[in-house]
Amino acid sequence: MITMPTGHRLRNRDMTAAWRHVDISLCVLVALTSLFGLVMIYSATHHRSGYGFVSKQLMFVAVGAGAMALMAAVDYQKLRDWSRLIYLGAIGALVLVLVPGVGAVHKNIRAWFDIGPFQIQPAEFAKVATIIAVAAYLGSVVEEIRLKEVMVAMVMFAVPIGLILLQPDLGTALVYVVVAVGVLVVAGVPARMIAALVLIGVTGVVGILSSDTLDQYQKDRLTSFANPDQASEKVIYNTRQAQMAIASGSFTGKGLFDGPLTKGGSVPEQQTDFIFTVPGEELGFAGAGLLLLLEAGIVWRVWRTAQMARDPVGRLMCVGVLCMIVFHVFENVGMNLGMMPVTGIPLPFVSYGGSSTITAFAAMGLVMNVHMRRYA
Image 1 (spheres, one colour):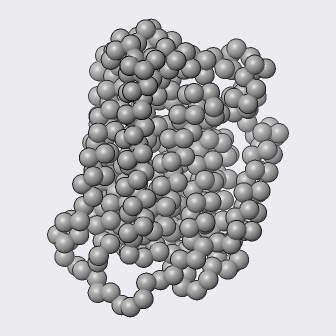
Image 2: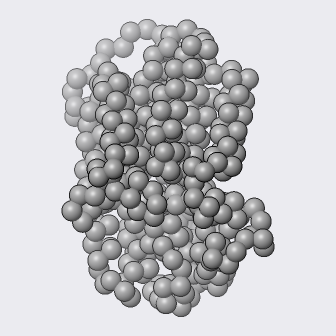
Image 3: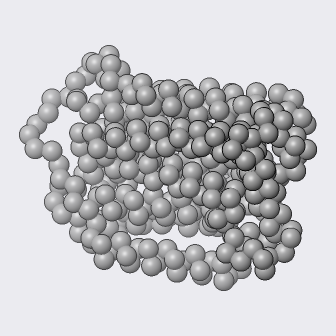
């Protein structure tokens, strides 16, 4: 169980004092990973679109950096006070995107707002909003967390999960499930309740796969990794191409911008879902390993900040972000290797995409916020 710190601490209103405690290591790791991603996106797309994709991604990174700075600037105690409004705003966007004529449908999923040439996915931004709201609620519990608090927290996670399943987007919904388990465990929820939550989650996934919520091709993509030999070639084509690209890279790779499969466009969705195949083929095990080390460095700094947080609210915010980033990396890389289902979950700071990139930066801003005010 998380307990409130003893004693009364005077809050330091001097903003310059907080900015003196910026986590420089986290900033450098995020910058290097984003730069790595820009190079990989260029390599995956320049043969067919020149600088089109990488120029947009550079803009997304710039906006994300601004979001990170803004999220770090507003004291997370104020975010705690505004958490209900932040959460309700996110839920409102998830409801609005389901309205025909308002939300846009891409790949049979109604999950985006089309604004000019850009697509905004509210489910991505709702991840950070939900983390803030649940951390604010559970972190403010002074005594032992009881069934009432657990049920309220579960409902707070269940509402966005249910709305996202209506899109339907099982992959994104799974991110919320993982975050929920991680936050509840660190908050001190009894193991029996966590076991019940996991059981409910597993039952829900099985029920969705057995129902008509998802199209058949979506079900096949999600389950083909378990029995690839029994899946149709069409269903496992992307995974097969990804495996071939990564395997061909050996230890040092084919050379940057010289990957035959990447240059030939043989791997579908290579700038987004299957971005990991680019370093796998062109930079080999060494380059792919370097990328994973950068991601691991980010995870380490988030974990360190969670340990150093001055109160339960900040600690739970960091834990929520930690679970989100870890699951994204694990699922995306596993999907590229054929070890996990194809869910369309992006690789943080590397995959092309506006909503996912800005959300990842905003999440880092939240962590930075906690780190900067650990002495306040």
